[in-house]
Image: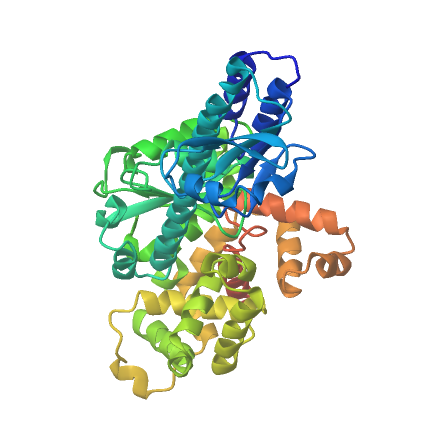
Length: 496
């Protein structure tokens, strides 16, 4: 046998090189190393004895047929190693690993090797066993991480749909501490997508959660991490803000130390209001772009639905949403999610195609007689859903025997006017004109630009300025659009 043996040092260097990487073990490099040391042809035969997993160049595959029975015994673990002759070649075989079924290392050379050269074969076999085991462990860890991510996403989906009980059932009895909390805040972190795995895994515990908290990869936006942080502090803590839990503090420090990051933090909500917390965190993230340290808390502005006359507003909402009783529950739930996230994001969240999500929403649109791509229809249904979620009970009220009030009648109250004025007061006049034109064209920036006689880029710049000024999200999730539609409409009603 030929070659310039470098002893086991070269093999150890190869082990260190591969052990330090995250890629699958490169078996071929190890086989090539053994070929260089022995001058023999080398192959790794799978445990079915018929498949060559990897081999050096020009390996004589015909040598495997006459030794098939011997390979079967080695693969089954009945023999540790064997030496034989086949096709005029000297053949040494070593089982990889202690138990069958297992692959076999086959070394075929023209002459019998010297003892010190032959000793490299079992060493190589041991290295291959170690690398394969490490590769299987890496694959198992990747599978575990993927399944843990899927479970966390499923729990988030249940919470977003207002179902803490369903979220508990999804965990199969291994209930995360987060679901024992009375309230939570959502910290919506924007970071480079390549950093998401590292951040999530750094704080992950052996159960696949994050202590009392939970970090979920946003399915809609690759640069977002949705961090559900348990918050059981009582209202009215000194300073008016609940103490930040450990993960919350860590995220704030992380953002302040990294200029590429930003963080939006919601108010505290019960678990059943996770969708509202998420919406608030999206608003706050929009404001965080220009906030000190790129961290913004949701301002906690009073919601419009809380200011409307309670019984008439509930009557209006029940009347508008009553046709949902005729559509499948799945379609209604998907539509509720689509009120706070783009349809593509809802599709990724639920593991559905975008066409399937659109078909479910179309059923709801037909039942309601509403076009949810129209911003005003969308805003009306969004408000009705918010009112139905805060209604005192599921049954109809006594005044449901009377015709429901119109939306304009509900919005005409003084409290709604004061709310609209407070919301829009910080907005520069030209930005308000751009916002109005953008909404009038169903958020089509190009059409708004044509209407105003400015460029599309100028429209988007004005909208970005409005986001920062008002602390709402317009261009990413669009969660701030319904409130602005209502606010502008309320002020328009006051002028007539």
